[in-house]
Length: 141
Image 1 (cartoon, rainbow, N blue to C red):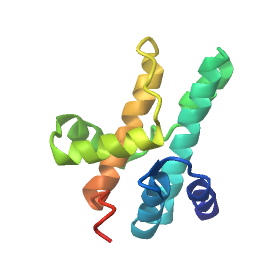
Image 2 (image 1 turned 180 degrees about the vertical axis):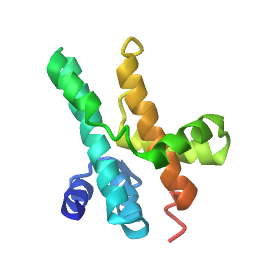
Image 3 (image 1 turned 45 degrees about the vertical axis):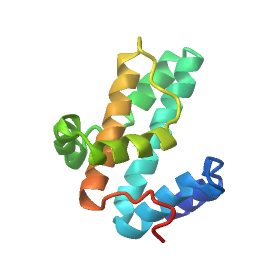
């Protein structure tokens, strides 16, 4: 899982003022969270991308596999979902910013399963942010 995160960070093309944004997020998570947390995030990102790709090709079986492959069983994420929905201010803004960097395309308004997957991923990021708040200030180094 750590090698996959490194490859993900190296392949980043999203940049802010010349710095790779996604690489900063992956590096920060890798340094602060247990390896299972990073693997869970990468796994969920893969399922969201697989669902997005399958829905573009209208592959129902692939969509079902990707939807069912998400970490619906993770109790930490399930616990953080209502907290994320009630949040406002800087904490919610940090989570939304991280999510928009990782998943730049919004969910299809007609696809409720895709919207559920996006909300679950936001809840996962909110859980990580609650334990180790994200730092997105490039000048804070």
